[in-house]
Image (cartoon, rainbow, N blue to C red; front, side, top):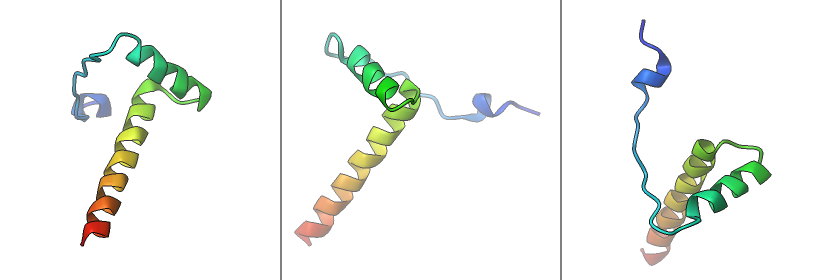
Length: 58
């Protein structure tokens, strides 16, 4: 049996702005989440915003 973490999709993220990672980590800490979970939530919110924008244009 393969561990779930080995089956999970992985992506290496490079932060282009100095301090960006630490700001996101602080945001995650305030919400009592891991940095990974915070990033996933922000991605989902971004996807929802794009979907709403597309629907509004139609």
